[in-house]
View 1 (cartoon, helix red, strand yellow):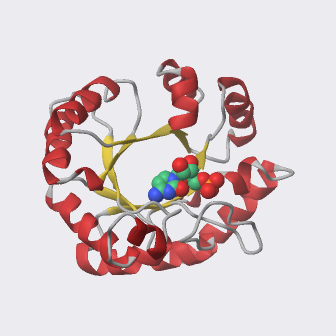
View 2: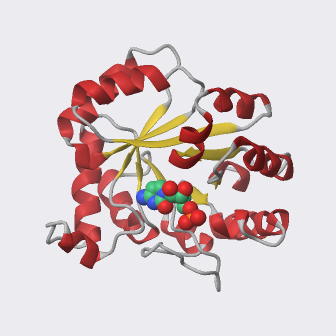
Length: 235
Ligand code: C5P
């Protein structure tokens, strides 16, 4: 797979204008962008079609988490707006995941579902605080196995869990990894971080990168370096 197919640029912006301006810099270099809660709530679904018209595939990171009937309804509503990937929280439970899968299968061209396991901003202490005594590694594996058994074809996890998940779930599951920080860059609010090379070498299918690109002095140079590192580690 080309390095360009493995990089998802997170368009974490408060309005369409800066997102579309970044697309101009990404044209010809990147194929995937992520629209998350901030941009989607600011612009609504029409932006997805505009991004597609510019030739990009959309990872719609809405992290759905509600009762099964409501999540199925959300999949029905956003499943037709042109996103290629759509996230939901594995923590919503097996019945919620199964309802989402069965609704997506009823759509003509459904987005591929990805279950978010444990957010990359969460470490062991933060898990304990919400009453989960497991390590992130154990919790990711528990949720990941449940999601795949429920029929979800891909997971979002940190680089730290990729090789364990590959060992248990095999090579076909799509593992999408945020919390990517090129050597020397600031972690910000992320806790379970890795370099692009480490994540790809561990077996990540795709990387999600936001601030290391959007806050770089020259996003195009940041992208070139990311793609080079992804290419080198894919060999
Ligand atoms: O700026 P940064 O590279 O940290 O952005 C990471 C992106 O990946 C954000 O848009 C965030 O919402 C998303 N994400 C994450 N951890 C997850 C799932 C998604 O950081 N588990």
